[in-house]
Amino acid sequence: MAILNDNTILQYLDSLLKYNSFTKASEDLYISQPYLTQVVKKTEKHIGVKIIDRGNNQIRLTEAVRLYYKYLTENVEHTNNFINQLNEFTQKKNSVIKIGVLPTLGSFLLPQFLPEFIKNHPDVKIELEEASPEISVEKAIKGQINFYIGQTPATVGPQLECEVRGHEPYYFMIPKTSKYYHPDQKFVNIESVDIEKLLQEPLLLTCAGSAIRQQINFLTHKFKTNPIIVLESTNIETIASLSAKGIGSTIIPATVAMHLDEGEYNLCPLPQDILSLDYFLAYAKERNLSPNEKDMIETFKKINIIECTQKEGWPKFSELGKGQKIKI
Image 1 (cartoon, rainbow, N blue to C red):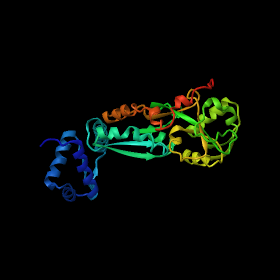
Image 2 (image 1 turned 30 degrees about the horizontal axis):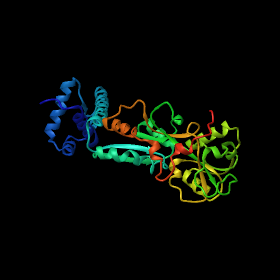
Image 3 (image 1 turned 90 degrees about the horizontal axis):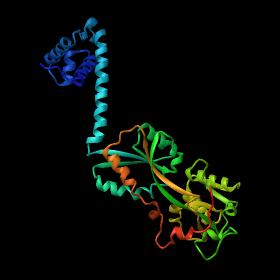
């Protein structure tokens, strides 16, 4: 009779300890009682110590075998972990990739690369988790998600590796209630406005700590202005909609401007050398990437942000953005 593998021996010992009976344990394991007894004796002979202490009508592990039991438990756990890690590289079917993403990015950025990836990897299941940057970063570091997709890679800590795609342009949104509003036209050239004066208008901004807010703070600091903030929100689309109604001016990415309803407001492109929005796909630096994960990174890298933010019928951003340059 050959010695059984560690996992099977551990299973037999656990059943014996649970039922305190060779008969009940053998029934639980769907083997005969004589066979279970034979396994125990064979294992005792193999390791050179007695396994079971039958004193006081209790089946207990002997002191010497407690060390063996610990070895079996750890060895089985390590083996299972190794198999799971190996499966990430070898198994194509039923594999799962979990992605943490900002709620505001789901409808814009994901359609730019996920359809191609899913088409090329029909056996991979994608699980999306829309959450705040803090939650997604923590989960990515701990390996609870495979990737985190966000904005402004400079805000990500050193524990994560980032693949960056950029640069999405920004528009200064000027409502009809502003004295700098140009009636009867949607777009105004950067040469026709003064950015410093626009920054002194009543502003609607995203909340402190957001990626967009950090960039706008940099802009106001550069121009040494103290913004008059009349409203803050966690949702940039809400801010844009309220600005269109005349509550105040704001600064929005091109992807938000593209989905605005028609209204009485101007869109003024800000030079990309002073303000643009980068997107990234991040993952834990210490992780060994599976082939599927590597393919997702390569697919993400194909995104052309400028093409994605050019709405049909709109003038090209480069044509609107010519003119005034601000040194950083």
